[in-house]
Length: 224
Ligand code: DC
Image (cartoon, rainbow, N blue to C red; front, side):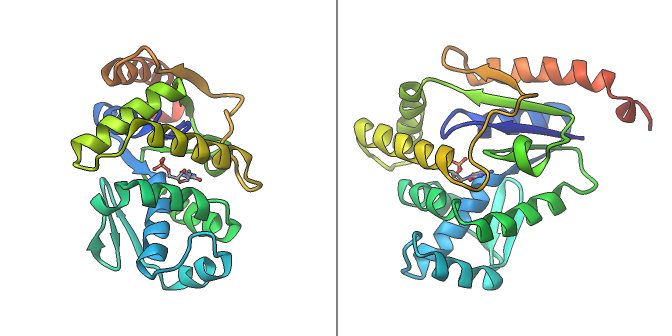
């Protein structure tokens, strides 16, 4: 069984997906971290994430290993290095490239095999797992999302002013929504949750309630 959570930047997908997966006993996949890992590897080589040819040439050499909640490149744990504003912008730039998307979508589908999975990103319900048993679309007011991201960055010792966070978030959303290949879309069959006035706990509570109702209805899930 696959549960997808898609939505714009800093909408709380990560916290929601981790929380829901823990409550249901499912595995969890952060696909944004995979795009971030590609951007990080590109930036580590001193290349611009907008250089399509350079990014594509790097893919065959890139050994990504997903061991939730950690992500390894060539056996090295880079999870913490992926959460910077620079990597966030780069990830949105490499995410427009069809070769990058094909490479990561293949990894995502292989990861899902034989698991019950909560997976979060931009295209999980629309493109990667169109037949997922349950789809959520999580959103929130951009100013609230920027505030949450600003707080997260400050708590992690990365001080950056709020206006910059908001501007970068809007730029990233704009690129993620307007790219040609797999833009961020609300799947028609997704349940929309607006977390503007909800705590992270309330979002997970709501998702868990809905998921348990759906699980009880899914025949495949009743059989041992
Ligand atoms: O969820 P996040 O902020 O960690 O994602 C980083 C970037 O990766 C995001 O700006 C767009 C891209 N992304 C994507 O294109 N498709 C996904 N399934 C997940 C992320």
